[in-house]
Length: 147
Picture (cartoon, rainbow, N blue to C red):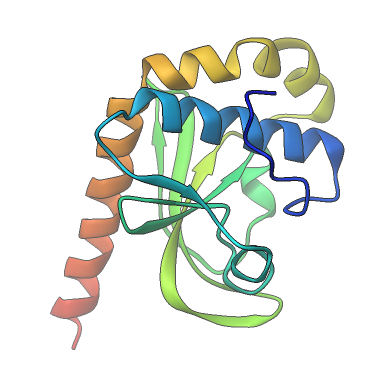
């Protein structure tokens, strides 16, 4: 763990560790960008694990389990999926959330992803943020065009 106390966010220990490592790597890799952890309420009701430069972000290693998803993309160079989520079982979100993550089994995450997730995310943080920002803007453009 890299000092990002997010014990309340997930009850699943593996998911929590994945979240902490990914967000920690983003925070340390984006020195000129604000990365803030979400509140417990934001996580539960708005599907938000952190806020990156004003954009709500949810992290997951089980990407295919997320519902209410739009504009799903796979970024091969990053080995990450991203999509826009607009709600969850608690209702519709007030703001869209960019879901960032992978689609792996628990065993694969434990054995192969977690050991390098923090350093890999830190090294690629600028590219990850660029993809988050671009997808968010694409969604905003789509919404504006459909009004």
